[in-house]
Image (tube, rainbow, N blue to C red; front, side):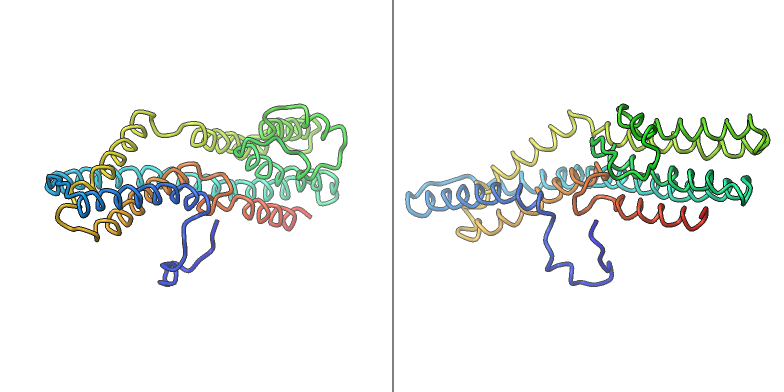
Length: 287
């Protein structure tokens, strides 16, 4: 995620992410050649096209409404993902506070175990949401436990299960009471809710029919736009078409990027830095 000052106008000199620019470039080149060719036919071959500016004005209104809905839907998914990771930050802190209060100050080994395991959950979740099954970044000293985690497909689930087993063991050994077990259970359950909600955003894109329709709408609008302009605007049709293509396709591509906010794109959530912050906070609380 790019860190910037939203109050400065210096952002007008910055560009989109590399993926967006890379995708836009062929479309802009095509529209430049296409609109220039139409101008050449009108200017040199004396072809005539019927003006469709009124039609494009009406289509532009409808297209604008579609794009507003598209970008708002994508932003809602991005913002929901940010709220979920904010809950992850708060939830890990709350669990650490309770473990610190419930366990004896002399029980340093158990405090150390949770100081390692709690930060491992957001670390594993961010990789899970990127379709990766990494274990090398996890802070687990026990080789047996590391081997067990390496053999599962859903590492966040396994880590949550291990913490459930640990606190249940404390209850059976009399280290915590039944009421304290119920209090800790709230945070452990919240972990599963956060993981499931993030997976819902990740695995449920916008409906195929809507995505297909808006792409076709943009394509038809842009392909017919030079025909409607070239007869009246002449050579200036080319830069006008390039600018409109840049804006319409840019909005759609940005929406595609932010609707899955858990990757490594410029506009994605800062899950790497949040995971590091959680690790630092938990160690400060428990150690």
